Length: 202
Image (tube, rainbow, N blue to C red; front, side):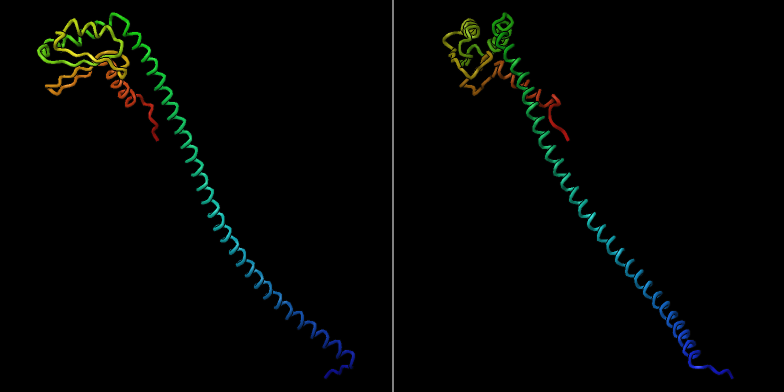
């Protein structure tokens, strides 16, 4: 049996204690590392989830803002198109109005007006007729008085007719016939607006 002096025993126990301490410290370190890594992973996952949620929220806000901006742009663009369409339509019909004014001074207007009156003369010669013509339209006034009996007609001039022609009324028959160039122009204007492709389509 080996005998150890006090110094040898002290060194022996120191080594044993140190070895056991290092062993325990190693185990504790592994446990600490495991717990640390587990918590870090959990925190990282939580952060990633929160980041994804926040990103989704911000993306939604961006999409909403973008859509609002698009709507505002679209509204402004629509307004510009509407104004442009009105300008174009007005310029077209302003030009037509000038041509109609010039047309009233030609022989062609006289011929057109006589043809319109002739169509009614044969059918309505025995009735009391009321004519409304443009104020100052001597062509219409002269033709009406020459084609119909003066005792059967009444002629009224109106500022509401701008481009010539006439409105014929038969009170006893409750009939009114609009043979004005104004009516023709309004018909063409309505047709033009419905078929000109100037409407805004989305």
